[in-house]
Image (cartoon, rainbow, N blue to C red; front, side, top):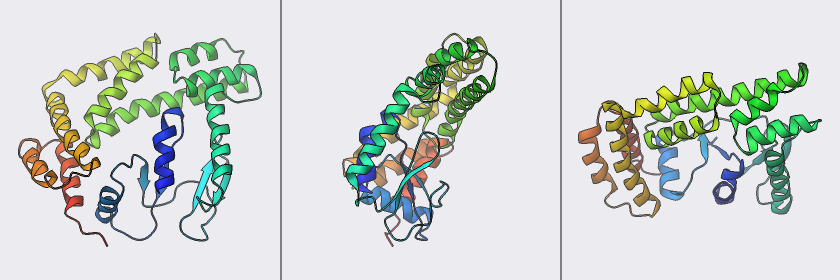
Length: 255
């Protein structure tokens, strides 16, 4: 886990996605308590069940590396071949930056779409392609990426991460460029952050983020009381639900 978290800290901004898969029968509260108390700086996605195409593990810990095209590149003990793992990661991140595919046009589109996250630029490049299988494939990738990023704005809100949601919405509006149909969908989503309910969520999230920062700095003593005080004013918000989950984790003994 320290190795995975280190890779995530160093390379997530370049395109690496780190997923920690738990399979030792702990409850969600126990899992969150373990992560919070043992690895407070963890930003990796955590799931209690495997959903990636990897072979069955032969022991713990077990890791796998999946390429940009969804193919399994390596699996095994994560500390067994650190040099090989790093080389494979570097090669895949280079693909993200420069794009991949059999033609220069496909590589340009993917470099714009994945490397720069320039959805508007990728749309313009795809529009200039001749009709055919390649254009259809790339258009599908673009549509899925836009839909995923738009959906994440709402998902972050449901998780009580309103500051992240607002930042994601601002970024998406910038990334879609001048594509009118996308601007017409994203701009109202951004304006909605100015309504009273959203402002209440954002204000509560700012307070909760200060508590989370203190926890990451291993200053835990005052966190439960600070969360309880926050819940008095944010009990009926999504941020309040997140704060309650955090408080439950803090009060859950490790198994």
